[in-house]
Length: 431
Image 1 (cartoon, rainbow, N blue to C red):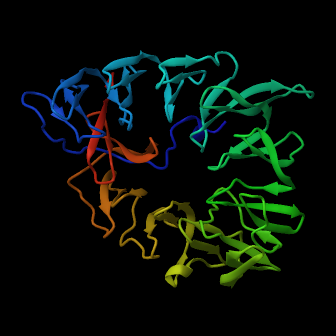
Image 2 (tube, one colour; image 1 turned 45 degrees about the vertical axis):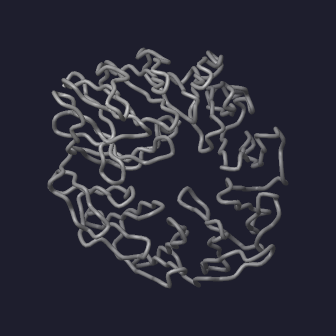
């Protein structure tokens, strides 16, 4: 199983050393408030106060993760994780666990137990699965077990739990992907695709030789070998048939049904305008590999000597040569050139003024770039703030929000939001 599924969704590599604001006298250093609480540091340990500066938890923790909207947060002592309920000033789980991951109010503990924070109880799934981890839909969890089948080899088979810890699908499938509408794409042992409605526990729609998860109300299906189309959430065909529609792990299509399709050897961008009706909004283009949608209605057509970026809604095009690797994000794109330098491309297809040793996505108005071995914030005007310097940085998705997780030269890890406000910290032990 990929590490991306097991861990919080990490998108890049960053760095940290941000000034903190002083909220109290003495040696306490407080960070920016979050959801009515403030993390503070005293003598290299962390505690939590309310916004009136009253201590709720004494500074005994080495790490405090960002606080969610229910006042719950994961903490750590000696690299062991625990769980706090700040609104009730309670320790829900002591710092005894190697791993705690959160999806909604369910906490996955050491990949084997579930804990429901709202009802403060363990959900009994011990020894049923090899591992439990979050899915792309917060209402469901993915599970897997390793089974030995007829050929004597071991294989991973996946299943689904709901938030109550009940089994929706047993671990019988080589692959399961869950859409935001609760419809899962299941691939069985015969490599057949089908849609399954997790809420109602029934198979839906017809069998397809290929089908993708739903995004914003649409999915791509293959009717037979050379006939593709989009379907809506009722299973109705939403476009004419095409010889091929582009889909891979970088492909997105927007709420208005934007997609890429091929006729003969030429690629086009299309948009749905009604059942069985679509119109071309870009193309034709000859491509050396399958094109894809990047971010919000930005089409990328890899061509012989360059890559063509097309934004029909903005009436913009841009050709870029020598792309070695391309990273697609919702709000900006990063590519690596032939000299191993990275560049930003923004939604209007403007390009960053400089090139960098490394770069990570923007959160809000700021990103981070690496230059001369150090990481610094960069704004959308391309200005780099060299007064803030870090040794490494990640972009972390937590509670459906993005944070910069940054490490400084003093062996601290700070959590920053998109305005570069430091909201929490980790003090690395043994350094």
